[in-house]
Length: 132
Image (cartoon, rainbow, N blue to C red; front, side, top):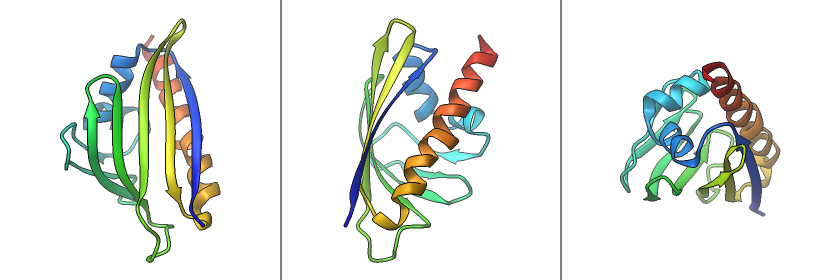
């Protein structure tokens, strides 16, 4: 049965910068260390980590919200696509990203859950701290 991941990350940058870093392919690649295909328009293709995750942009609200259709190579073939929602909020120490990742298959739930910290939050924070 599909599950939902709910996380929040506090990063040392304002929300508009965090949004731009996620949606801009060069900035996204800079903090993840891997090339990415992404765009801000609905329908734009998303592909990252050498094709290990992919999907497309469903909706954006500039500097506030990104909604993606999202899949992983570890999803069973018959699994429905997951939906990733990232919202960007001001915080006294920079910005906060709230994540809701719905319909993640049980078979990849632990990997996706841990992957957000390992492949996004930690390297993103390190990148921002180095640039400060």
